[in-house]
Length: 400
Image 1 (cartoon, rainbow, N blue to C red):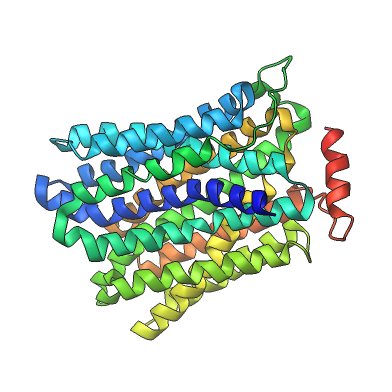
Image 2 (image 1 turned 90 degrees about the vertical axis):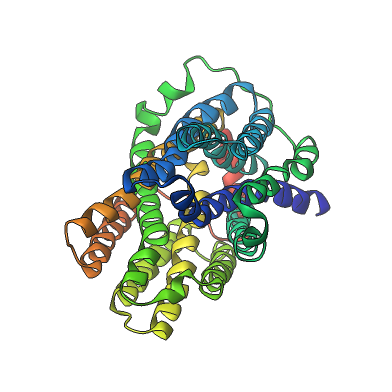
């Protein structure tokens, strides 16, 4: 039991670091704009650089995890991320800042699919699903910590020293990760990046990549851009510490309920519930006309949207044979990261073209509906919900 929760703690830091990084960047971007007099295009490039790096990180590190082992790659990604943030504190201008953010993104983008793959290798059935959802719940903790740093520390010490604090977390995490378990690397007749596009995996790769694209595009489009739009509409509360903290705290029960439901329903059913909940929450958010309505609908949106993300993480690794699991997970998330890059730009473009916020949110609703339909008709869920589920999944694992 102790080993189980130590693994959860160590792997959960992958999500925690990723969330801290995304959150801190969103908090320091206004400071960068003022310090370096950045144009909107430059500011958009700053935001996109990390996501582009994550695309390459997910693809490359997922493949390497199948070739040289999950544990080694997970340690390398942490080192790359931490060294990148150390270098970021010395960035003299926006060009260097963007380059460093791209390199940092490679580490961050590689960290998550490899961490999920490592957990998937160690557990089966319901245990696997619950562990992956609970590991993803550390994302909310990362946002909370970043919010505390942004509102309580950064005004006093500046953004460079705040980024340094996040980089020094490697001193805690690296020794722990040395004790991670690792599966022996299985020799492959064909490169794993070719196998995931062959008939036995092609449908899973395409559909899961499309789902990740939709989930990441809508998440980053809504949570990184829409607060600024709501400020323009006269709701400055969305840039307050209380709003940020509430949105982060609302994610935790969403994750915990998803972990509980994994033992009662199939993964596919849980994900459908959360996608439908996200759709309803987006509609409510688009109709919000006062601070209370924004807080309530925003909290529900955080609850369902991040719960859907966690459930998709639980669903994805089991769709691939163990020998190509890292590559399959990395490929799906890499294509998802393209959506994460497009989302904020798409929102900005639509607003610049004078589309209303209701129209933008309506587009997100349509994308989420498409995702729910793809899941309902395309993904085969072999999860067995019973006390024999773990045994069934272990048996199916050996038959891949």
